[in-house]
Image (cartoon, rainbow over all chains, first blue to last red; front, side, top):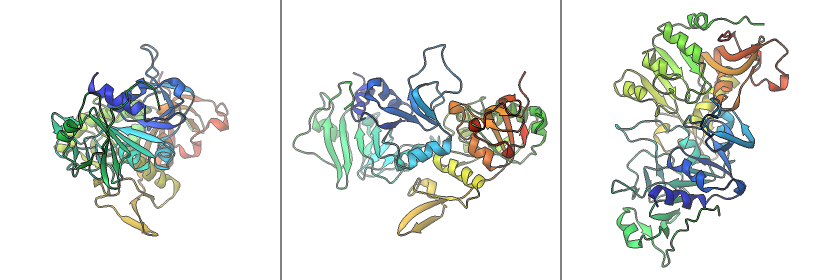
Length: 221
Length: 217
């Protein structure tokens, strides 16, 4: 199984029926393929849609029905579209149950950096700062390392997206929960040992006696 | 009642150096014919307030590519490498604002508010040089209103009173910008006779709209 698929399958199990969820562009978007339409999870996209559906079949796209990356999407029956101020009212006002975002770094305080690399990549924060500040649960979905370099670090070196402590970090190696007392290793990916996770992580992390293997069966929890 | 004007007649109203809000999200729901007219009129030194700068050669990206823009206030320029390049080269000044804060700053201007207080951006680069206001011991980031000389918006339908209705995700920043621009120019897909847009379907009342752009064909 590809690393991204492990992450996406595990994140899918964090999303609960009857909730409103925003999936970031890229890896997080792919989480939706492991969610059944019967789970009753409603996807929000910050460009102004509540009830975003899958990509339309080729030849059935509509120019004015798109996601936050500008890609064509569909709307589920019962969906609603809103303007940007209302969309961010949903996000900032605590009406969004969860957001799943990619990450460049997360540190021991559970703080996320994911919007720029000074001097190299300055795309802008888009909606990321509002999402991390306002969503009730913030799930970071990212590969554990970038070309061998650990991304879970003692202190973020890249500009922060928010000072808020994220809810959960899901990588292709582990599930880590940031707590008031620091990071706690909760689960390990199939076939990955605790020693391998610690080797790929420079942040301090509490390791409980039992670190079970993560459940990546495709079904919402 | 408003008589529709051509995109080039609308562009002629806009001087070089103007501050312009442009609706749209990654070029979806942008006034594309107005953008073309600004490029054709070879405008210079524009300040653009928008969610993003489109893609290279698409939407607001056309204004960037044609060198019409000297300053951008946006939340995201990641899908337009030309904007990033011009920013790094010092040709375009770019102010990045969190998307929700951008919407609220525009809304504040249009709604007669002195700004908004938000938690978004506290403790990050977005707070640099900004005012932090403490209320009952809680810190908030102050986001001042954002005004513009012109708002160029796109709508699905208008009537000749200038009443506008939007469609799906083409709505985005258009309604708040239509409130905030000193002069509002709308490019609707079609213009219906007065009375043909039901009052409940009007998202932006025509009193806000100064000019309508004539239909394409």
